[in-house]
Amino acid sequence: MKRVLQRPPVGVARTAVLIAAARAQEQGRLDRLFDDPLAAGLVKAAGSADDLSGVRTLAGDHFVLRTRYFDDELLTSAAPQVVIVAAGLDTRAFRLQWPPGTTLFELDLPELVEFKEDALRDLGAKPLCDRTAIPCDLREDWPTALIRAGFDPGRPAAWLVEGLFMFLPPDAGARLLHWVGALSAPGSTLALEHVNRAFRGLPQMRPVHRRFDTMDARWQSDVEDPVEWLDGYGWDATVTHQVDLAARHGRAVPAITDPRKVGAARIWLASAVRTG
Image (tube, rainbow, N blue to C red; front, side):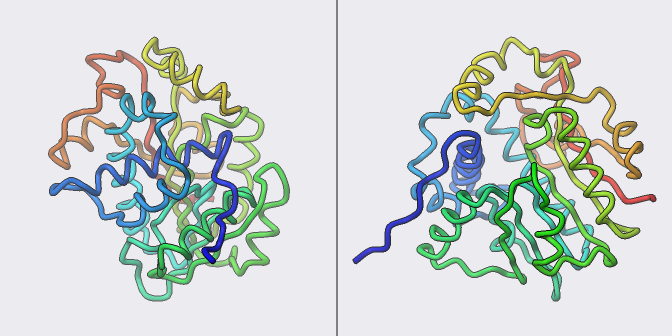
């Protein structure tokens, strides 16, 4: 008898299916910017992302460039430990060519971790590094769970916080950055995404916000200067614009990030090195 998967993602966890669907679509291109043969299977197991098709139409090209940007940042860091915060249906442990000895930790809600582990098992997925999935709630004591799983704060780490900060209230974002910094040895790196206030208020984003509101996934924060923001937590940051990413990879600038169409609205893609 076929084993029954755990409950597919619901609520805010549905955003993980949205991103996986964008990766699955990119996988079908001959000129794809990355390989992700597991994405389509994960989306199928989760019940497709048709309920979020409008969001994917608006931002799918951004998701693709964002994925490649963070892929490159993580591999460039060559840190012995990688931590993906709110990992969702991320498959980097299975599709990137990690340096020998890399340990990768994935943090997310218990129900999403359980669903993903079942789905990956059914897909026959084999990680390309030492991978540990940690079920936890970021509102609780996730640092202890991470350390107990084998993370060593005395060694450099590469952190990824993709598509999360805008969903957190400012105080929760501050706590997360505090603990990431406290657990980061000198030379650690951090890659993340955030938005500014103008982007949150874009007319094009109103249908997205309405859809997210029904999923209990309301955007709750923004930042005007990510370099200054991260400097306050001991990180030396640089920001890469989607215009430059698109040029680098021979793609059109995503409309939702094109200054000619959105003015001062910004989705920040930042990478940083631990300075203190």
